[in-house]
Image 1 (cartoon, rainbow, N blue to C red):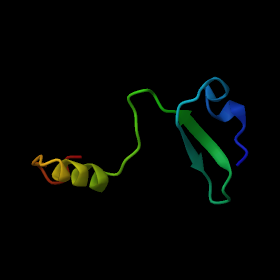
Image 2: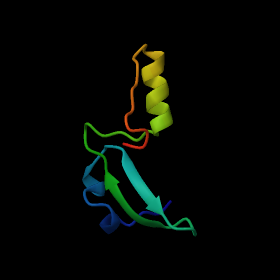
Image 3: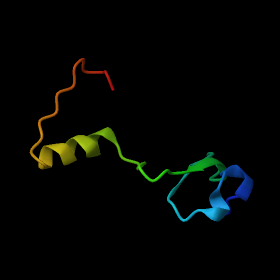
Length: 65
């Protein structure tokens, strides 16, 4: 995938993970270099991981996230 350097600030100087947004044609339109403490996950993945670790998850109200 061709990602122009100017679309993602710091891309050429970073070895960190990068989040890339694409349009329907598959072209990179925006992106960002993730910070050291950032990661990408879905809420179901996070909740399942907490459950597997034996931690109880309470969400109140149900749509608060």
